[in-house]
Length: 168
Image (cartoon, rainbow, N blue to C red; front, side, top):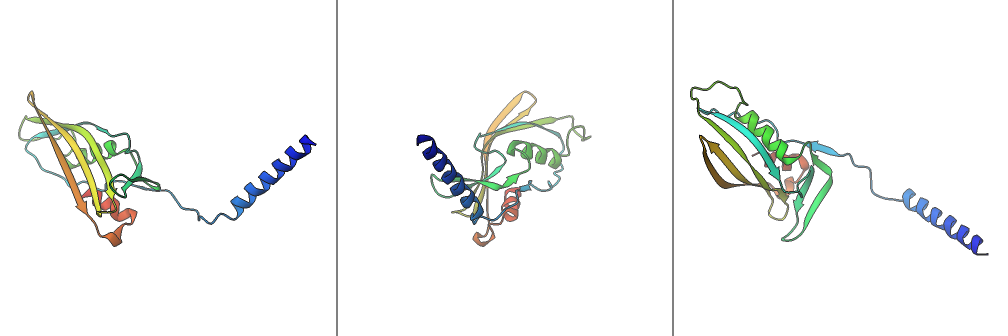
């Protein structure tokens, strides 16, 4: 009797599971990948070397949306093609011409840092990038915080426009 009850419960559970999957209303959605776009070349009289950047653990490859003061949402379908620190390092290397570029000066500056914020605020309609930068030049080290905030149209919150806002 107990065995028959367990079999009936198992069959009922499997049927419920199958019907749930068949009548699910969520459509299939492709995972889309984005990067920061092409860097604008910056002409400097010195060699700029790009060191390593670290990023807060929250900011992986998924788009992160701030929905309010204490609410953060990770987008499962729109992602960065690489981790934010790799995107920033690559962008800076392309902007400053990479290493080994001949310059008129022998002076070299190294830039590195910690990415503290790399997210989109959908309430304020802004893209936020907050970085603690470390500049090293001839045994001198300078530290400062750089915050970049770019506003975007509330009606323009497509993933393409959000990624473009982060590139500004």
